[in-house]
Length: 211
Image 1 (cartoon, rainbow, N blue to C red):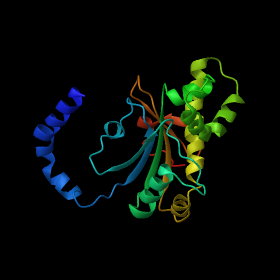
Image 2: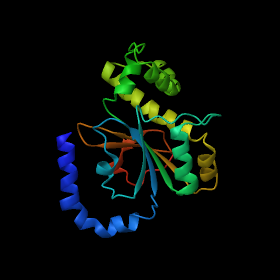
Image 3: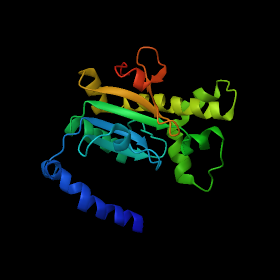
């Protein structure tokens, strides 16, 4: 905790003074361009990965970068999606998975989660991805996990389309969806190509089609 406190002190003394104008502008309003949905994993930092300044990203973080399908009892994720799209007017939504994901590892390894009932319930929102991944053959546990991470991003993109605000934005061509996967070891990012359904290196395909 002391490291965190000292970090804030450095921010206030060294970083904030250089960005006073930015924070003054942000003190009364925000207009982020992108809703960024990613995992709670401490190794995945959206603002660092995208080099985005404060105010650029509206971020949702949870175990497994999951977006439940819209339902009669929408929770915090649904409310945040609705606010980002309908009120803030974001133009893009990124769902970003990552390598070595603990949530996806628990699914692929069939880990007993009886002692974690809330986690087990939450991960059921990845059942479609799980079913698809289990229907295919994988040469190793690592390949199975990598495939599950990809299928989960695809599944969550399908889930978010069921949200009314997102459906309206897509229908009116005011919104685009993107699926990304961050590799922690290499620092690389894969992006889902809306034309082919394949994940391609983002650095080589900066104009990749949205999904």
